Length: 222
Length: 222
DNA sequence: TTGTCAACTGTCAGCGGCTGACATTAATTT
DNA sequence: AAATTAATGTCAGCCGCTGACAGTTGACAA
Image (cartoon, rainbow over all chains, first blue to last red):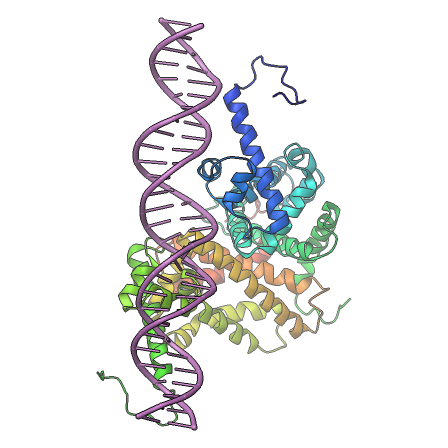
């Protein structure tokens, strides 16, 4: 019953129980994402996912609090990656500059973090799934807001400000997050679904912030 | 079987059928919001709402596509009110200026639009309910994005730009919407739940946009 | 090795949101 | 008054999700 995978090292590694758990969880995740990609999110039943892994529906709900969680399991990794990248920015940078560079750098290195669990193209297709499924999109936006709160606190800390009273960190992050979300949306409806494409779009949109703030766009149309 | 309400004018007015429909719909809406305020959104069953109006559950779902819709019925009126107000802004104003003035003016006159159907304090309590109920908050964010798309097109039109290619309208509206949402959130967690309070917070936050964009906040701390 | 304990799993029953189908009732038209 | 049309109730059923209980399977010590 042994597969070709490495079963050699038994020393100090997690026990059989842990390995089994991880395997079923991964299997559920993979099956779920695959089924979603083929039949859509709402067109896929939790029973189907569980059946594909030969596990009871009840077991599925012991690994994932709800159907959504399978979708956002990968998104979460990307988010954590961004936060880590932002934390690594030098404190001398202005807030919006740090956010901008962290976002771009984050896209450049996303593969290193996520790639070990799920291929990058699956991540991108999952993004598309989220954008195109209303209930997932709603959940995504809520999660984005929670992320924004974390980031706002982080920025406030960077600048030595009190996030509770000074609105500038919140505003800056709200602005930044709003622009990023508009970018995602445009990217997901476009044709080029590569990482490079969203990176490029992000740059363009962030470059448009300053011009957008100055009134009277009509004279310098392009 | 006649109540004290006006049943006199039978000429040209909507028939009995229409009036009955409107009455049950209003009754369902009122009962739902009241129950939500007392027991919370998730703690209230559709059956309870239907029973309170002495109507079958099935009938409820003939008036509202889902439970959420009762909550957002009032929010929708407020949104339409904002869009109308924005449309009325003089075309000479810069985009962000028009958005800002429309938002504030919209709060000043919200009572005139919504008041006829639901008292204003019910609207405010509904806002709170939305902010404090995760699933409603998620739905609210999605609706906000849809509204932003409309507004972005409207702004692009105002400025004579092509919304499909020029990112500036999208960016400006995303920025503006992000700030407004941060404002709502702060307001809903505060103590003063009056319209005046959210109006004031809105002003403060929008005033913080320009300073937030210039880097290095540390020197001019406040 | 064996037995005990803890953790993981399956089964079952049930709730709540939501829908289709069909019969019933009530308003409108002729 | 009869015929037509629209609103409603009833019923059965799917799906997401949960609690409770029992059975199975790893972990760990005797």
